[in-house]
Image (cartoon, rainbow, N blue to C red; front, side, top):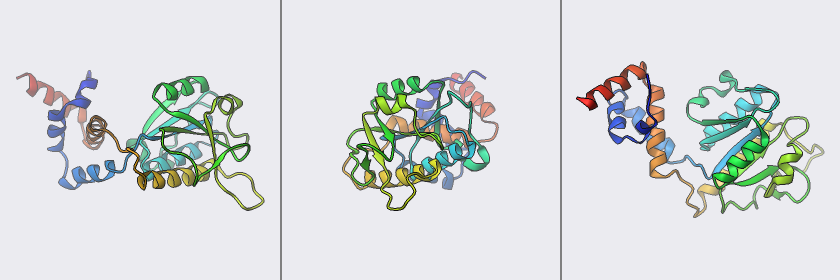
Length: 227
């Protein structure tokens, strides 16, 4: 069927969908969305091990980051649904074919470009400034972020380490940074929560993903609306 994007802003459509969901499911959506944010977004650049990309997605979902951006310039699609454990239903995945395309898109959306690196002038996790919306870029397992991102970054962040090892697996470092920053964000006075229109869109999106035969259900709603 030809599904209209306008339905994601349709309050009546949401009310119709709710009739197919349990009260527990509806309340659970509300509880989770209260802690969702777009103030922080995550970018994974050409991660070779597909289970690492999927694990990063899972960390986004668990800690409330709604948007995951994946640059697939070298290795193609690297999302493993078994590792993500259903997180792909609840996190928005934005795919980019080039590094520059992703950087330009992040800037257009108002994000500060932040590169993860253990070197240089990187700020520690606990001191990083979260006042502005930030796009945190994570690089490949072996070589880290590409020079293209490092050179265009507005800021740099690192995880304080006191051992001999200078780096962590991307899935581990992403989990630490996402958890640390989202915890600080929720303890701050920053307006980090989703806006009303974003909340409506996600409630409709998640409701649709929870209903069997959603195309038939939607078609019936549209027919009833015309009548």
